[in-house]
Image 1: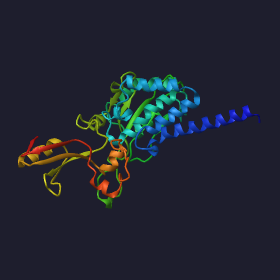
Image 2 (image 1 turned 30 degrees about the vertical axis):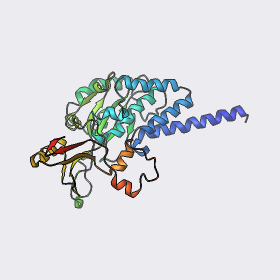
Image 3 (image 1 turned 45 degrees about the vertical axis):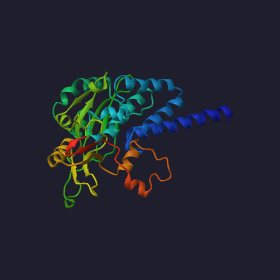
Image 4 (image 1 turned 180 degrees about the vertical axis):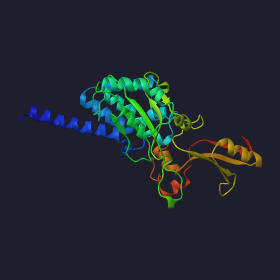
Length: 316
């Protein structure tokens, strides 16, 4: 084999490897991390291999132009659309659409032009009542791309398209979660199987591209929840008090309680989980000193979220 042939063979192997990784992250994004950094890194690497970085950067600019990319990425744009535990797979569907346009997405099934046209025409009316995962597959057939695992207790996204990269993906965003039941009853979902919340099927502005089921409208984050990656609570800690004395679902509830008792102290917002780990995970804190992450540092770490100081029950 000549050196030119060896180089060509090596380049082909590199491309095949990157292509496999791209299609892997687009099918099981949760295995690659909590946010979309894996998609961005792998797709940009794929663009470098194919010599089309300009096209990749143009696609990224296009996301911002249609409000599909917030300061916290595509995930941030979805925060006003879906519950927090449905964001990971939904976010990957936007990058899958880019991969399809750039010729990298390997479809599990390509719809015919007629099937795709019928799906696009019918889906807006079809979602006016609640639908399940089974109904989606029974009505429209197996998806072109299944994003997420098969576990019926977790969210997932099903995408449909044709073999023509000019067609956008029609994405069905489904949700489920573990129900809070006695341990003696075993694991149960909120629903027997994932239910459809929204379909992304319109071109143009990202916020206007969705149709919602009734359940999707019920589960859609409220204005107070938008912008939060995780569930949070408000904890009241009195001045000079050793322990916290109140925990509330909302700021208003905490303010009302503290005001009723004319308390002096701080009402602080905490994400559910360890404050240090969450701050690092969300990029709000970057360890840079030897003591960062030690037991003492983690134990004393503040939440880094919103807080209100009160005097005699009133905001300072």
